[in-house]
Length: 69
Image (tube, rainbow, N blue to C red; front, side, top):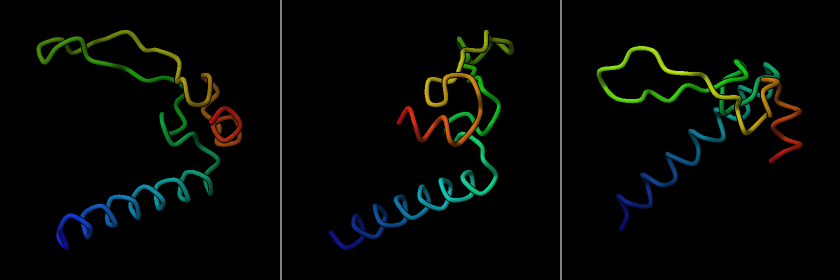
């Protein structure tokens, strides 16, 4: 159980570090400030349609992500 707890602590610390870095840059942590997210249809398709980020509602800003969270 020690290894599993260490992994979970590492994962949560990494996520918190990502959130604090995105907050400092005023970017949405989900889309990294782009305002959209692309989901590949398959491994053979190189282009897929972009979708508005549901975290920031397409603005790409941290304040909007924090508000909608």
